[in-house]
Image (cartoon, rainbow, N blue to C red; front, top):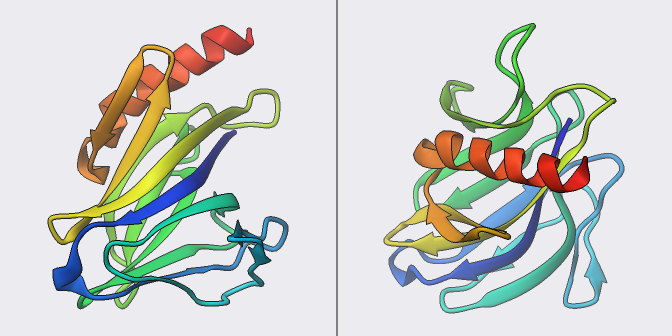
Length: 162
């Protein structure tokens, strides 16, 4: 089971204005600057603002979603399989149409294994990027390239845990 935690949000793209995040996971409620946010309580990030976050989980499919609105875009994110036998993926959907835009493999699925990944959510050049840290280095990638990079990261994390 893959668990993806956003530990920092950094907004470096003033052209898109404020970024708005809504998270409705029933168990994990984010804490930012000492304030614990409830389900779907607005988290607003102004241009040039950096926020450290705790418990900001990207929910599993069927449990909730993380909505990120920026500029004219609104994306829903979830972690879950793309097929009956697949691993867990970070999945991004157009919030208006429900169409899946991206899916990036994150780690194994099932209760016997847990792959926990910490990421920073960055807004650079008018788009979101995820930055992750691993013992092998630091990388910044966009969602479209997460698959190959995070498969390597998941393998490295599992190797440490086993």
